[in-house]
Length: 112
Length: 113
Image (cartoon, rainbow over the protein chains, first blue to last red):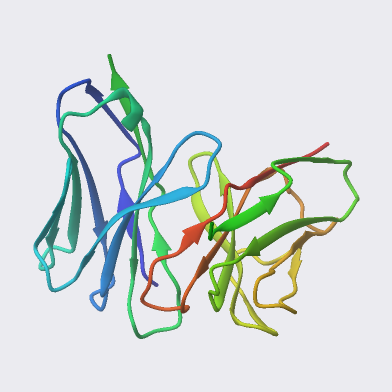
């Protein structure tokens, strides 16, 4: 079945850029998403990218998609302590029998 | 304000008791989902419903049951058959069940002792 892989931890200094990586296996993926989860809360949709795009920028967030390698990344510029959270990558396709497939999440720790 | 509500935020039960977690949405979404989250495990899909009066088992449905009698409501019952019920439970909804983003509620932390 479809699978989404992420590294579990990332630690950066405040003010630096963070890059969170994700790989997926489903070649029919149509939409790829990044969600943020703060402690004890639900998931918040941060941004998304269509599979026919290479890059999407939204303020401090930049999403890069390498469809050939099935690799997605989320770059957070000027990382702040408020960015400390778990970040989930997710993918879905318009066909098939499954809803969103999530990675296990990357815990980002920002050191002041 | 449109959104998804889950209640209560924290729930405590004794082993052997069934417990029902509430999930309500006013987004007019057709599809709703229940996930379980354990530390380091990410999200695991318990049940989902594509439309009213229909629901499907997810990856870890054993020991859980759901109903979808109204579009806005998708309650989850954790039965005594669930061997390890202590977890964080997340409800989500989406306008359709494929190819679109899901919106999440704030979650319910269930502790069974």
